[in-house]
Length: 413
Image (cartoon, rainbow, N blue to C red; front, top):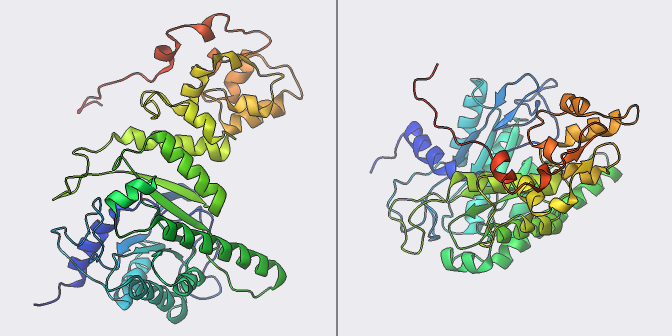
């Protein structure tokens, strides 16, 4: 049987990689080719990030192979799946990366793989791809490597020496869900690999402080991904797991990927995908924990009786509506923590309010100039000339503040 051509393999393996969401790259050390070498990480990041001038910076996102010895029910590349298979060599992936970079198509590489033969064998090939780029071609662009928890820790460590970021997917929010849908995977083994990589990152940072030429190790940190909607885990379960992952392993990001039905799906999987807005609400809750000082328990308080976040309003508004006794907040006296709880006030707006009120007493018009919109804000704040009186306690406040559903016209101007 003849081997498929490179472009045909690229079509198969790039499509197979689309289900992995954990490929954002902000946070890496800035490097460029001004003093030699090939590639750059300048700009805010690679893949779904934007440079200061508005350019979208992308990377080559591909699998080394979609052959796999595992049979995870939710994965389209599982061994029992009837899909076209292909395999790259490390040299082919390196050549594609360099070729696309020289054409200005990409500025980096995101490389993952199905597991062939064993975790060690597959991880060796992933590391060899990065080695070719870094050592043989002096490639200085961004590299994100998906590591395999079943592989030898020493091989995973070598991956971190070449990559800007590494990641290991925890796959599902609960151990029970992982055991049921991915019987070949072990939750303790995954967390062990996350912990080892986390300690390696800390040690490398400490060594860099003491020794000028200490080797870098995954300077952009590590991330992970959870599938949403493939099992019975609620949003409260997912938020709790994400919080524990951040606290235990110092992750840069936890990514959420809404389950998507796949061909020849297993009978244990749901028949339809969860609404994409659910994935969006989880990202919003993640943002609240990372930048708005919300505790996981507060996010869970915003969920309904089924443990899921409401889909029609964002988690911050849902929390505020449940705890109306905390409002209205006086923008001239309230602490930063209380201001961050106000729906419609972002981190930058709160900083502007704190800075402005040092010099003058704020009025409602002043707040309007410091925020994007007063639509949500005015119901939850008071100023020297404004008090919402009974507005905050209105029974229909939720319907007033929820985004209006609008049917878009296909041929609208």
